[in-house]
Image (cartoon, rainbow, N blue to C red):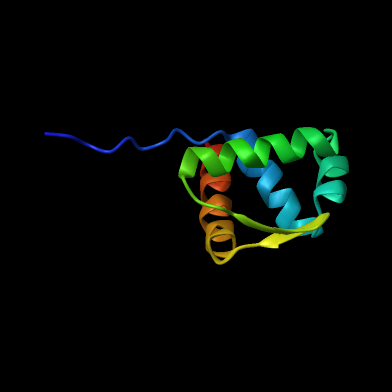
Length: 86
């Protein structure tokens, strides 16, 4: 029997993802989480790879949430809240 791998999500990546959601930009999120903008971009690439979904639609130098990204925001909030509660 083959089972699919369920990814272990990185809470730091989720917090960075939520900082993007809350600030509206990678640059402002980077300031919020005390990382460089390139580190934030790399974290989001790794998060997308972990869940197998594109969370962002990139257009030129900007990006916005994909429909998967928009749905993922509330799930990420729940996971981070549970982590912080524990």
